[in-house]
Image 1: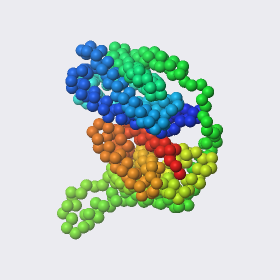
Image 2 (image 1 turned 135 degrees about the vertical axis):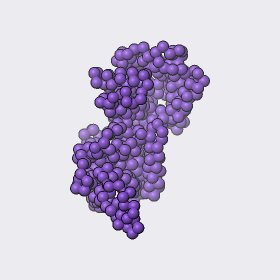
Image 3 (image 1 turned 180 degrees about the vertical axis):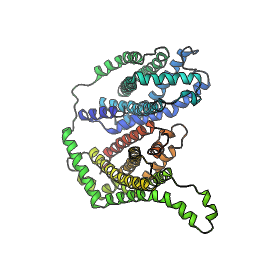
Image 4 (image 1 turned 135 degrees about the horizontal axis):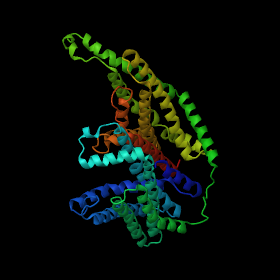
Length: 509
């Protein structure tokens, strides 16, 4: 659900001249539509126009129709605004441009609603497999729903792939509707946009209504497929033939070989500038010092003059204290180090003219950016493994009781958490012309991500949820797995790279 829309967009770009910026327009259209779609549904519910969604609920059919129209209207309006701006600046003249916008719109929905929410649901269900549900204080209705989901997961695990099938059909819908709106602007005929609105509404209303009466998930997907067939036929019928890419493209294996060469060059640069040594030294220092601080800080406090009377109040340090100290040091200083060392990755080379010189070679712009991110990822992986090894050694010596497998798995979560800030820094460096501005953008993005972790509903799904998860691994305690935060971090990295490439493609060097 994360990689499919990206793979389709890459395939489209291999055959047509189409910019990644249009994929980003689709992303913005979907996210922007939800800003008013969700409050609109809340307002309609308050007015009594949207009722309960359940079998036997009064006014189920009108509720399904209104929900479908609400989604169709909200997202079509966002598409109209997006295409209005694109056509005004003559940025979406070709059929493939409309397809790219649709892939972005359906792609981000597949990544978030499909990937993130499916992962969150699966990990939540897996954590309940060996738990007595009666101890959770669930209502009778909740107990029935959770029991049914657990039975489905254990007896028919292939149902987990139903979400993938649903997202594939949804992406088809988004591409078709996006092209209908594109045709409305291209032909200056608003009826195409109206057709897109009602086609979208029909999809959503049918899905809501059918799900209340049909238990077989695959049968529901079959009904949605039947609704998608007219759109697929129209897409095939209207697709222009023979409009191949006008640019000279390297063979894919040539691009990948150039990418590998660029990554090797970046790693060599990291070594020559001593950045690799600095990063590894800092992480190793925190890994070694964290257990020592946890062990001896209480002893130092007890030795202070006048503190002897409070000695009994200071708890004996444990393995959990060493882990907490390690996580705190890594999260407090790690992301700052990532931003400081990465802020000049692109901005500095643009400012000195190095980027222009490098891109005069066959290296593509996407490979130029991706090589920098991949090299940074490798450096941080080495550094965090060194730090984790130091922390594990001293924790085992001073405290014991730290399981090696889960502990190092937790460090992989911390590595992924750091990569989110690395991609935010790369985006800031791509947007800016100077290192100072790049640093400001990166710090602003980092602050937004950190604050998002405190939001009531989506906070646990933000990358900060990885830190909470990692802090529990390796200890003899119950672990609350958070697949939603894991997938959200991957989505943010993928989207951040796409936006960076989209911006870089449009820049004059």
